[in-house]
Image 1 (cartoon, rainbow, N blue to C red):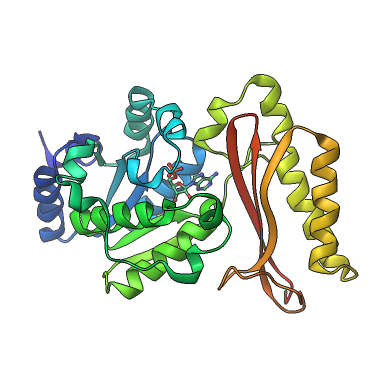
Image 2: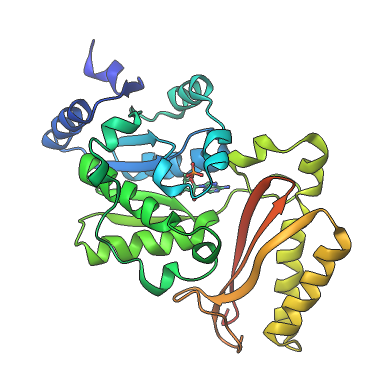
Length: 295
Ligand code: AMP
């Protein structure tokens, strides 16, 4: 096959040694490597990361791996959507060159390889960290392992999982990993619902109700911009609205610093992230919006 044709074809690789060999070859011929790690059930949000990578690198590698060590809830792991056939078709037309699709033993050959010695620190003690114990250590473990395998020049992460992005940035800094971690904006459905693989698990009725999460983030943003409410007042107003709505069980709703994720009391001239996690039936949804009050 000519290298011209090859550049437009998706190659699916399941073995670490094989993806390492192919990427090594590409790097030796001068290509920059962009990497988009995912858990599959691909949607337009994932594709926006791949598109960004394609504009900045000659080679884009996407991984699909539903990582067991980051699921603190076994039912959530089993229920997580797995749609590899349609994912491959989507990736084929996205222009991504390599899909790395390892099985669990390939990533974790031994029991002792399932955790890394990385202290997530205070960034992991708040928000998702409170409600999903062990999640970030599992996430950091797999991301470090994937970075070690792929050795990308740049890696793309969505702001949809803003805490994850901050923790990956810390991982890279603390472990001296030579990769540039690039944050990408959250893609939303027309009604504002953040695109997510978990949305596929919602019933038609729940799908309509789910937009309420985004409406609450917007309402909190508007209240911050009026400059007449304190943090706790805003949270109370929002939680009252959730209670009146009746469809959600809220894990957290908070207004935090984009650097530390600590709660913010003073909103003037700040970069703020408003974060929410809530159950709609059995499905746990998270979302956030970023706001810069200095602009
Ligand atoms: P996941 O497959 O859910 O682990 O997500 C893989 C990557 O896609 C992560 O960096 C996510 O933050 C990102 N992502 C997920 N949903 C969206 C979205 N709606 N917009 C942009 N990026 C997203």
